Every structure is written in C-alpha cells, then in structure tokens.
Amino acid sequence: MLLASGGAAGVGGYSVGWLTLSLINAGLAQGKGRSGLNWWLLSLVLGPLATLLVVIRPPAETPAVQALMDLAIADAEAEAEAEARGEGGAADR
Image 1 (cartoon, rainbow, N blue to C red):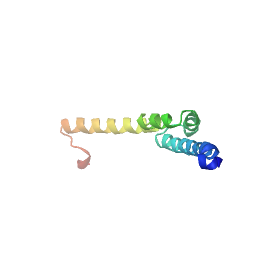
Image 2 (cartoon, rainbow, N blue to C red; image 1 turned 90 degrees about the horizontal axis):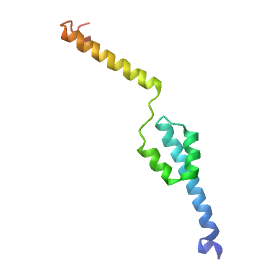
Image 3 (cartoon, rainbow, N blue to C red; image 1 turned 180 degrees about the vertical axis):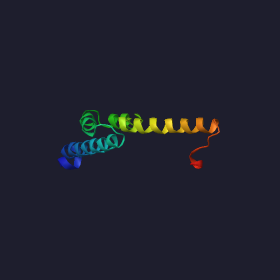
Image 4 (cartoon, rainbow, N blue to C red; image 1 turned 135 degrees about the horizontal axis):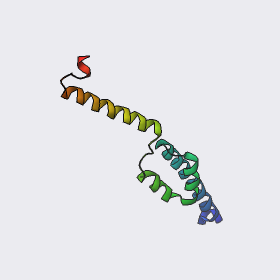
C-alpha cells in the first residue's frame, strides 16, 4: 500500500533521477572544458539549476586553445600584410 501511494518509491525515484542528472551535468561540463568533478558535486546540491548553469555558461578557453587562436590570427595578419605589400600570399609560395 505504501508503494501504491508513492511514499517510499517516490523518494527513491527522485534520488535516482537527481543522481543521474548530476552525472549528465558532469559530462556536459567536461565537454565545455570545465571540471567534471566540481560540477558533479555542485549538481548534487543544486540539481536542475546546475543544468541550467552548465548550459548557459560559455565553454572554458584553455591556454592551448588560446595559443592556437593567437597563432591563427597572427598568421592571417601576416598574410594580409604580405598581400598588401604585393608579395603574394600562401598560394604563391
């Protein structure tokens, strides 16, 4: 009779759902370059609110990604300067 009313089974179901959501949040956070462990712990406390925070926060820029972006920008600027001086671009090499 207790199970039919949703008493004990309801609490267990919410716990399983909450734990599952926290693991999903950890995976989402890792995909965005953030600490999965920290977001898992935060998700255990905040639950669905943590999901919203993970989704709306932009991806973390790691130093390696920033270095690659800087190299790409510098290369593009150097090529544009070379074309402006009439030296041609990468296609002329």
